[in-house]
Amino acid sequence: MRDLGGGGPPSGNGGVDRLAGQLTRRQAQILALAANGLSDKEIAKRLGITFRTVRTHFEKLFRDRGIRNRAQAIALWAGGNMLGRPQRPADECPYPKPFPPDFVDCPAYQATQMVTLDLSHRPLGSVMTCRHLEGRLMANTNYRWYGACVLGDVQARRRWSNAVGIDRLHDISTLRQEVSALSMPYVQQLLDLKNAPLGESPLAHTRQVRGVVDELMTKMTALLRERKPVLDALHLPLDACLRLLGIAIDRFVQQGMSEAQWEVPDEVLALFPDDVQAYFRPRQATGGATDSSLAGLNPAAANRQRFPHI
Image (cartoon, rainbow, N blue to C red):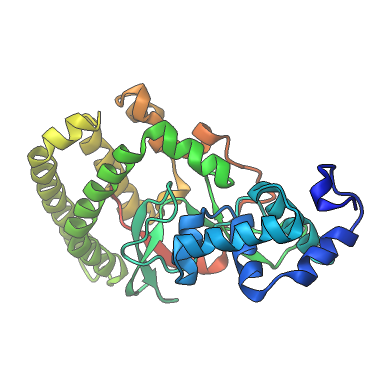
């Protein structure tokens, strides 16, 4: 490998090995997180240090190792750490789980409340996850799973969030949490009814389910009508949102499908303006992977269901 200050591209492994051997523990942590796509601000928050401290570590690397910039440091680190071990998937979510309530590190993060079920499909509780997170099988294995982002890698996440709009995403997320909070007790009732024996009158059971759904839709309609000025500002037509909610709830009742297992129907998507359609079809908006050899739900994910919401 040429001298790092010489400006030429690296060749061989000697320089990479030398860089890794000279790093302090903190420098290695910072480079590992940077290689996963985290910004300096995100790295500082993850490690519990200041943004200035992160910058100081990078500046010391530049000065002491003759490295030109942050990108070169990351490239050298990634090259050294790929030696002798499998490369991590580019679409792997690099953030710790479960997500904390105030999580804002990822620009594409969309908080979703997920109900965890036991083997008998009885609710155990709820956790916060991301709308875009799903389990996928590691390439060339039949047993290793990882948490993937349906949007793709870090660049795809930023493209999607920029296309929809950072401010709009924040406001939609706030509205979704209101919808989720309102729906929670009704979803619990529906889960209880779905798992209850039908008894001697299946018709009475069906009427109970329908009654819960009708009450939920009545409450949802009232909430969204109150928030119509917000919906208008976000370019989300009220009628389109109500129709989408109705479809999501019906699918939940009839099939128990999670949000990640179905897309907004074309006829409903057409009711939304072009500038927000990317929000509902994130895979298409970013060219996200749909290869069936890579995609697949972790067996544990079969026992989780997401609340229906916008």
